[in-house]
Image 1 (cartoon, rainbow, N blue to C red):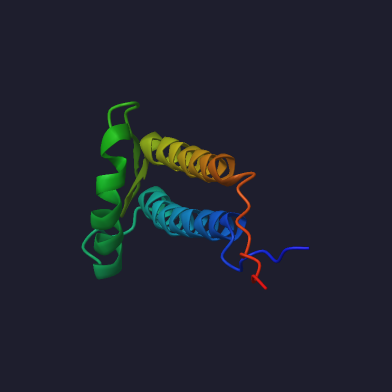
Image 2 (tube, rainbow, N blue to C red; image 1 turned 135 degrees about the horizontal axis):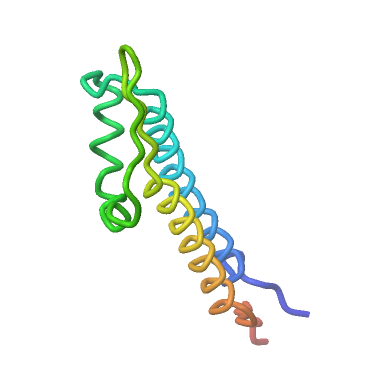
Length: 119
């Protein structure tokens, strides 16, 4: 009977997958904040709102021209629906899922065993 090394490929794949999903969770959270702030007409001069807009802008560049943003003007604020943000969230989730599946496929069936001590 052989003992598996603690850092087996399966464990590394699991850890790598968790890291990918963690990064996705952070990105999706930032994009949700942006979507809600734009929908509710948040003040873009507010520090936190400005911070969220500036960080998420780079991730939305590939999706900006897919659809036009819908704007409604209220008495004090303007609400904006950015379909590009929603599409970006879906695309980034699919990319993360694909990366995790690729990691699983590449590490499946690779068992590394401890060498047996020789007598």
